[in-house]
Image 1: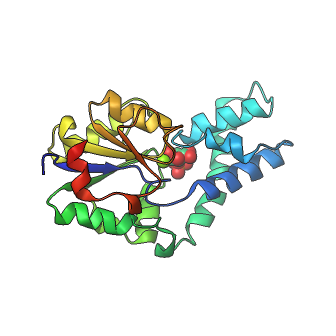
Image 2: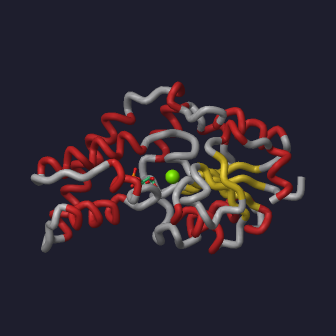
Length: 216
Ligand code: G6P
Ligand code: MG
């Protein structure tokens, strides 16, 4: 293969946690006296926890919260979120995702996770996926959020592969931008109308084969 490694975003690529993030943020918004739509929730994909909170408070017209208050709110949301992901099982891995990662490894490619989520270790453990990745770079080890390429550059470095030899799989616009900014090849998971900067877009990892990666 011409490429050497695959770096996978977690939420929305390997597992659909968006529904749990949505439920937990919605519960927080409701406690604060307002609501937001599933459509607005789309804007939170790939966005870090504190940046998501800022967006949501903006939607509710809530201004002037101290940093301490914001941290308390984000912690409250995360407690509900972790309760929900604590009950996840490998049955919630997205169709074809596990098999595709295994096929990459069988083809001699290195594999890594590149996610904004600080809950990545818990989710990987719940889904029993840890052993399929040579490196895990997540919200606990990066400081700059996507579209900054930090998370993916650290992934490539951890794998010992140059960015140009990596393919990044992402469902978020900011995530595709991060990979492009890092000089990597990109596969979008979702719709081509949304992920306009991705080199190739498929609806899921069950719709792509490893040999196709060399045509990117
Ligand atoms: C992913 C999700 C976002 C989430 C972020 C941080 O990028 O797509 O919706 O806000 O991770 O997740 P965390 O688990 O750290 O709150
Ligand atoms: Mg994602």
